[in-house]
Length: 454
Image 1 (cartoon, helix red, strand yellow):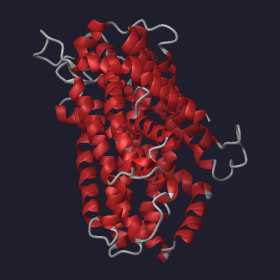
Image 2: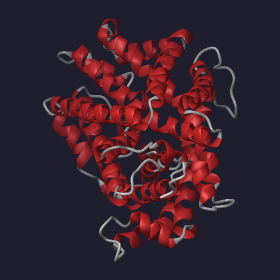
Image 3: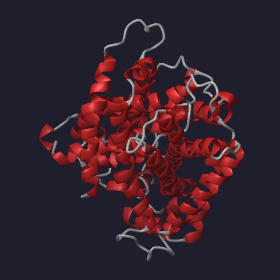
Image 4: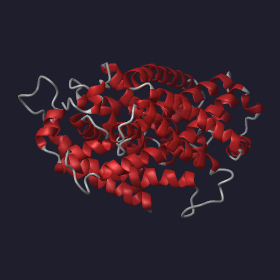
């Protein structure tokens, strides 16, 4: 343990095992599970997509999470300081730069989408003005996003909550918040699933999600499932490495990585159970796409008993999931500013907030006054999404896995991944993790990277 590191000096560690699990699972659980997974599954054959997705979570997701954990806890530093201490050298230290850039860019566009959940909470209370048809809700959504002050206010409100949590530090901010939000998120999600099971289309929805037609597994489905794995688990930009720098030495990294990956997958499946029975009940195509959450589901809510209540609970759920993810994304750059610029946490949060707010404002206005300004044919919102999802995160994940698999000293890897009480022997699963990091993960991520550029 590096006792003279900034984290050790300030005793910024997670206090409990529950806090570790809640924070790391919260980092992974977000819009990727509740917003993105259902429409990816709907577009790619339902159960066939789920089958491939689960395979990649086990074969790739868990090893990459372990790799980030090892980098973070072995150095107790931010993502840039960690690679510097490990003497990575170019090009192995590329994840430091890509991770920091990704954390700023993703907060720029992610906070805009998260801000929409705040507006839709208000809309749920009002019953969407009595509108229940998807076409009219589409027009209502466009009118909202194209009204600059509405989008800006919602985005800034979300960012305010995010940075207030971050400013309170690890134990009093991130850990306490995660310990409250994650159980509440699961309770609300389970309530939705129970309600969905009593809808007329429950059987068809569950069959779509759990009865695979393997003939639907195409190269495109495989690549989409891999991409969803990286996006959903938030790997490749140093969020989990940053959190791992706050783990104590008793935290079992492989077990924590497994619990994180499995919990994240369970939340995604529950989101599918929540959404697909409702979709089939009202005769809506499961491949409704990204508009599923903000146009199709409100239409469904307004057609069922207590629809306003269910809609309100849904957007509370989406808001909480968004916030648990953005907190971890923000901590990547906050940790960097604290350690590399030698600032206090509160000052670092202010600096970070200024940078992110500028980016978020530009992204929010990309739907209105800045919609005519495009780079490579994309608005700033779409460009930020494209750069993070298709370039920065895949590149970061590829180099992190290759670095730990090929370059990192084996003794460091064994010491970090071997649980306490097993120091005399190396568990066999470590060899499987190393094999995946060396040969499987870099190739798969490279394929996702190439596919994302096509």
